[in-house]
Length: 237
Ligand code: ADP
Ligand code: UDP
Image: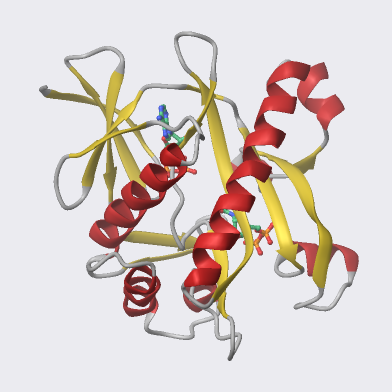
């Protein structure tokens, strides 16, 4: 497999073509951004930590029956993944109130949400990723009704699998964002990444933040804490 030209450079990852039209390389960079790219820093080893963490989680999900992009870990900072036709929406599940939900609805951070709640956001930096609903997705042709149902079912399946996994590591999976794409057989497949950059994780006992809120809120020890998350799941980094 040969690495070819760059397809896309995002805020945290660069995507490369390969000589296989079905496969792409995701390169995880050290760049860390928050507030729609207003705060950007390079954090030593973050690319490597997120690349290996993402590979570990995608494999775990695959074993639990979730179709993912996972193919192979190529290097410290690169993964080989299935090329997907990405659906331009973000699927967010929340088990505990935090972040934009609290700002938007005035609810207190830390309130348990039973059942967990689900939100769609449009992937559009210029518009600050506005919240959207199923009807917007269908009216604007971003996905079909069946694809929406598929994304919701998979996002909740991921919740069942990962709340349990993080619980075993004495962590609470507060919320997370997933992105899906369509493979060449029309299946809805989990793409992009699952790392502490795209979810909230709290220590079960102290409720200390173990995710990108450490960066957003300037709490320090960002990568060190991501490594601790991995170690608690049995992944030595
Ligand atoms: P952003 O675009 O939000 O700045 P990244 O820096 O993470 O984000 O860039 C990664 C880009 O690659 C995203 O646009 C994402 O939708 C896309 N992507 C992720 N996984 C795949 C995949 N398996 N196939 C095709 N595109 C993907
Ligand atoms: N999230 C993300 N990318 C985004 C928006 C949100 O990974 O562009 C994740 C975020 O890390 C959190 C969850 O989705 O785990 C919910 O984010 P929220 O809507 O609370 O927004 P935020 O507080 O991050 O602005």
